[in-house]
Length: 71
Image 1 (cartoon, rainbow, N blue to C red):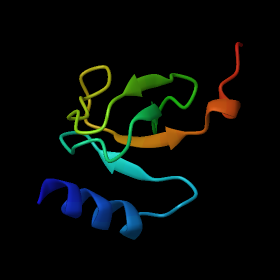
Image 2: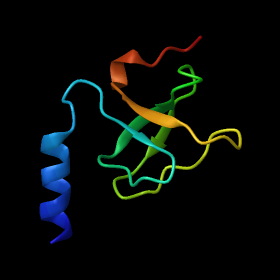
Image 3: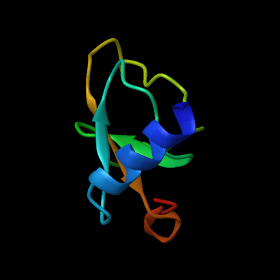
Image 4: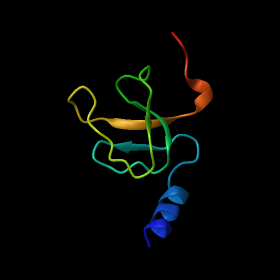
């Protein structure tokens, strides 16, 4: 049942750049950045609960692997 729910969630989320808030489960494994610090990129696995960033609840946005810079 969990797999079916996750598939429905993936289909409902925007294809371009999904986002989710602190305390939510990661919908898909990959690289994610907090909204208020887009230069920070962290890796999360599907099902992981998104943490607060620097002690502050935030919205996490999925990053494409090609958008990570080494600045």
